[in-house]
Length: 200
Image 1 (tube, rainbow, N blue to C red):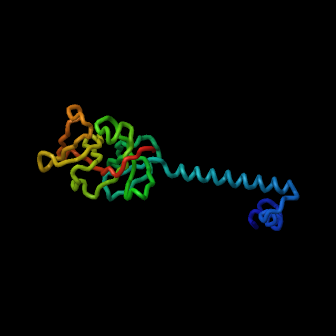
Image 2: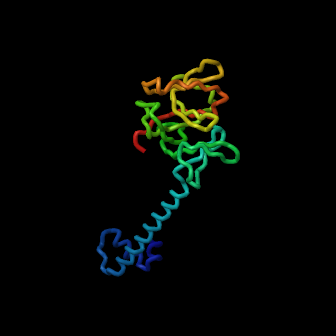
């Protein structure tokens, strides 16, 4: 109350009375207080928007687990795009705050029909980096980026050789979406699929 009284010129006693439910007897004081509160509300809204601007909706996620994700401040690349910063590749991901999912790091969009009906074209998945990308749980979903920086969501199984993996689509039309064999030398990064988002 003292701060409001000093800012508006309205006596502290008057403000205390109004707070307790006494009706204003001076309408000019009432409108002075209203203008002050409106200004404060607008200022708080402007500060909130400034804070949102400082927290962009997308992040640059380095392939290395040992490096922190940083905001994509220029906002030019869409989620799912691989960019290069300081000669290191980074995956652009949408920011997500979902503590109930555990250690997740971002969201990307699934493209194509290869994972239907599990992941439809345009659906979103939550991903996380792995401590060791060669220690995979066979049959689970992973987002694999090859050396051409093309990303693909698939179930992962052991390959035909010790130095390879097999990427299998969920689409029942296996003739159209056959398994893909990749040598580990062809794999740039592997991210675990943590969840599917139905609405974003």
